[in-house]
Length: 341
Image: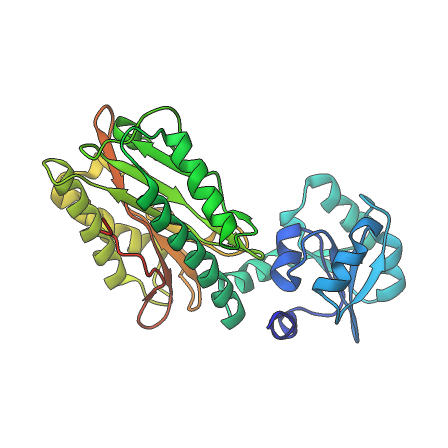
């Protein structure tokens, strides 16, 4: 399916499109350690010699050219494109690289088109994301079964990452968060030496990378007592409110506001301190965003997170995160229940 994905998505770009940002190249080809040049009749993957054999295995249908490592392929692009206008993903590159492409190749910018296309996932991309999510959820369930009272956050985080790798994760989408007790009040908590206790909250935020694609999921164990249950109720109600609003071409800010309105009704406005969600693909955080300041429409085919949370310093916090495919009726991709224990 990778080849079909490539042939489908490359049609969006004109001849002599040069992509240099690793994630943009990975998005189209499944191979990150290269430059991609879309030609008039043929396409070329420009790789350093140490990546040549690996590239031949991943993308055997492409013309693979060896280039000097860490050198911009100015000479190769001129030879292939001749007098054709050249465009590149300039906004994704560092300033020096972008300036060289403009001054030496006269490159125009096609970054906005790249971003627009990356937001809309095709069947291959959705399958890869589903696989990454499946790995994450299965690894988590096994980790939960093995988590005993007295185990440290670091210990459980390491166990979860180990199980994701055992189940086929090519890497982790981001550093795993495991936060017990009061540490769960920090949205980006760093696992430490707090120990698991079934009378306290336990928050898990994790994701597997499969091929070039990521998953992102949060689950929070909530003891059956006040005020924790009310925190969980607010979060779950906020997810449902957001799902009712999320449709193709709805502004990201409108979806965020639907969840935020639930928090206002619960009196938790000040406890919901981050945006509602973000796109996921070859990057763990990418457009579109479900945020108060995001006024752009959410396109059909995007995969986004919906992850409301409430945080009370010194007490704890609750966050639940679902991955959703945006369509006329939004499709929740998760199989793992939000209350699994």
